[in-house]
Length: 144
Image 1 (tube, rainbow, N blue to C red):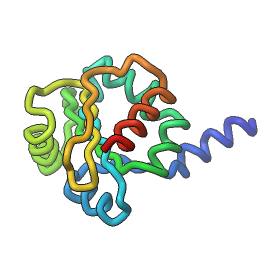
Image 2 (cartoon, rainbow, N blue to C red):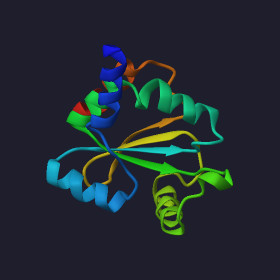
Image 3 (cartoon, one colour):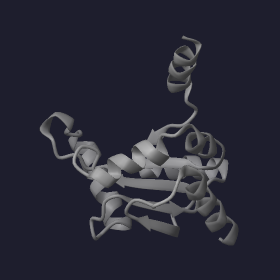
Image 4 (spheres, helix red, strand yellow):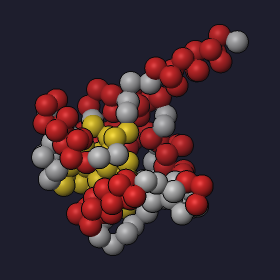
């Protein structure tokens, strides 16, 4: 019971927020001097996207790392009618894709500096665990 309660509290008190507006994320990144991690996802149709979210991006270890080091942006492109985004959000995601994902790859994860300059990209599911993925982010940032 305690484990369940602890897990539920963690879900509701999770310190990370996936932003949906890149311009707002950039403002926050500049304020906090943090890089931005953008995740292009097809949340309801792309198997590797779903796997990336569940196995890496939604793990406690990644969320802890992200809360301390990153600004997160998710550009989702769902296909099912029930998951349709607002017209405004669709436009924001399409503009972001034009800038960072013109080939329409899914999943695509892009690490930028606080001003939006690309530092590194991951095309597809990174065939590694959370610890290795966060280490790659750290290493990319230290070389930047």
